[in-house]
Amino acid sequence: MRLLLDFLCRFGWGLAAGLVITSPVAVTAGFFRVNSLVVMGLATFAALLAPAAGGWWPAPAAAAVVAWLASVAWLGEKRRGGLGLDAVSALLLAAATVALAGGAAATNLLSGLVVGLTVHAMLLGHWYLNAPGMSVAALRLAIGQALVAWAACLVAAAVAAVPRLPELLRGADSATLALLALRWLAGLAGLPVLLVMARKTLDIPNTQSATGILYVACLAAILGELTAQLLALAC
Image (cartoon, rainbow, N blue to C red; front, side, top):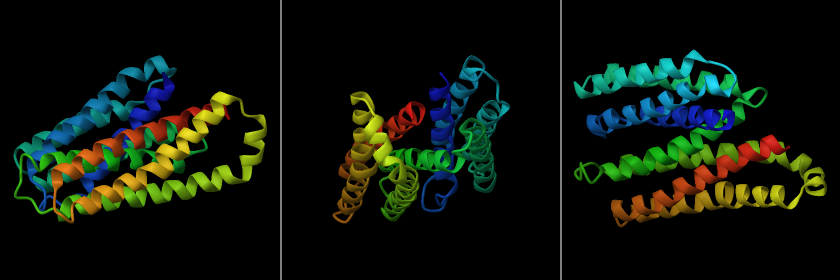
C-alpha cells in the first residue's frame, strides 16, 4: 500500500510540474483545466490511501483541494491564478514524496518527473485533437522536458547502482535480476528511444502518430519507475 501511495505522490508531483512549465499562451486553457483535475484525482487517491499505509500526511489532501481550485481558475481562463495554484499542488505533492522517501528524496522526485512529464507530453499530444490549430512547438518542448528528466534520472540511477552492481548481481535471485533488467531496458534504455521517435515524428508533422508513440513511452516510464521502487524495497 505504501508503494502505491509513494507512486501516486511522485506521479502527481511530476504531472503538476508539467503544467507549471507549460506556456498558457501556446496551449489552450482547457488543457490545463482537464489535467488539473487529473492531478486532483491522483492526490485524492493518495490521500485516501495514506491512513492505510501506516500514517496520514495532509499534503495529498491539500493538493487535491488546490488542484480543484486550479481547475476552477482555468475554467474562467485565469492564467496567473491557475498556474499559481498548479504550482502549489506540485509543491504539496513534492513534499509528500519527500516525506515518504527517507534518504532517497532527490531520486524519488526525479522519478516522479520522468513519469509525470512523459504522461504530460502524451496528454498534450492528445489535446491536439481538441485544438488542432496549436503549434507543434509546445509538444516538441514537452517531449524535450521529459528527455531532460530521463537524463537526470539515468545519472542518478547510475551513480547509485554502478558501485553496488557486483554485490547486487552476486546476491540477487532470478526475480531481482528480472526486475533489474526490466528497469534498465524499459525505463532507462527504451524510454529515450520512444521519446526521440515521437519528437522526430513531429518533423513531418504528425501529432497523432507522435501521440501514439508517447502512449508506449508512458508504459515504459511507468513500468521502469515501478520496478525501480520494487528494487529499492528488495535491496
